[in-house]
Each structure stands twice: as C-alpha cells, then as structure tokens.
Length: 334
Image 1: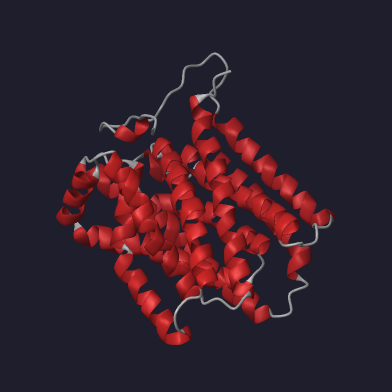
Image 2: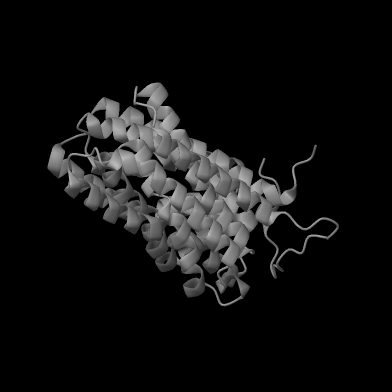
C-alpha cells in the first residue's frame, strides 16, 4: 500500500529522530568519560564537512552552492552560526550534565519553540499558529514531562539540572530559528538549493564558530583523545549527516504548511523513546517506572495525533498551500 504523501514528512522525521538519538547516547558516554564538550561539538562539524561534500559533488551541486555563499555571505554566516553553532554547542554541554533520556526529554521544548517562532518569522498564512497543532504539542510536552519527573528527583546536583535546562532552551530556539531563516532567505531569492547543498552550506558557514570552539577546547583540555575523535565521527555520520538530511528533507516537504512543519518538529519527541531504549540496552540503565512509562505512551499518542491532523477528510481532495517558486527538493532525493 502506498504511503500517503501527507505522512512522508512525518515518517522522515521519525527516522531522523532514531539517528539523532545516537548523539544523546554518545555525548553522554563521552561526558561520563571526562570528554571536553568543546571538542565533542566542534569535531562533529569538522568531520561532517567531507561527509557532506561527497553527495554534493556527486550531484554536481557544488558550483551553485558556492555562488550562493559568495552572493550572501553575511546571511549564511549569521543564521548558520545560530542554527548549527548556538544549537549544538549548548546542546552538547547540556548533554554532558544530564542522562541521555532526560536530555532527549528536555529537548522537546523545541516543539513549542518552533510554533511560537512562526508569527515572528512569516508574513503569510504560516504566521498563524494552528490551535490543534499547539494543543497536540502541549500533549507531547506533557508526556515528556511525565517521563522526567521520577528520574529528575534522583539527581544529586540541582545546579546542573538548572544549567542544563537553560542551555537546552537556547538550543531549542536556535535550531528552528536558524533553519527557517535560511529557508526564508532562499524563498525570497527564488533559489532552489537541495537539502544536501543547504546542510553543507550551513556547515561551511558555521565553521568560524566551530574553529573558535575547538581552539578554546584545546586551550582548556589539550588535544582530543582517540575515543573522542572516533565517537564524534560516529555522531557526525549518524546524526550530523544522515539524521540532519532526513530532518531537513522533511521540513522542506512541509515548509508551506505550518501544521505539517510543526508535526515534523514534533517527531523529535521520539528521540526520548529511542534514547531510553538505547540507555537500557547499551548502557545498562534501569527501565523507567509506571509514571515515566505513561509519559512515553502519551508521547506516542501525540505523534499519532499529528498524523491524523495531517490526513485530509475522507472524500476530499488535498489542498496544499501554494508555492510560488519551483523547488527541486519536492522531488525524491536519490
């Protein structure tokens, strides 16, 4: 049976969440082993560069990307630093302060942040916050809170928890803000960059920030260990390349519909489930109690509710939002 077109962004978002969860587990593991968050975050993006360059060069898209970067360097430098730098550096530091499952749960505030940013970013119908989407986002966040309560009580350092929450809040605003501002910039210029080009462009443009972070880490803790380089490489491949491309592909497909876009961002709630399973199976963590298990069930219900929200009424034809420009990424990515 053919998958409905409205479900494709949701499925891509869920698959991205699976690969994103590798970041939570590996960052937590390196943090417990005494790794430096500066090396952990900067190495990921340095290693991502050649990995992302391969598909762009194979698709012969390098020249088009370089023309765009030369035409608007300031825009790319600013919003790539926000979307990648101010997202992942605070995220990584917070991840070293909290268990993977708790970090994954806290990160779900990006669902609401993505919705609340819409009126500030858009001038068309996308600026309206759909009430059903807002309600379901609240349900997902409520489920995430339930998964955290009983475990948060066992933390020995409230200061680390508070700092982790503040850092995660910064990351949760920066990620959708940077991503959407780059997409809006491309819309305004009438350009059609592929997902591969966009992710590589943002990685390149954020590199000055990462070189500064790496230099600071080197001054603070010396050169990175072999284990840090290896595990950062795994994060770069699974989360930085595979998951990011899947997620950006999903946001491209949903960009003209605020509800669909919110649903894609809401699939990140599945990271909590994947991170918890990973900690139980790979890091020998204890399985959550009844309250946390209930929270996981609520998260799943919220994601299913988004899928139902996107489905057109029976007997009606889909009414996609108009897109005034051709966009290559509406086609399947090979």
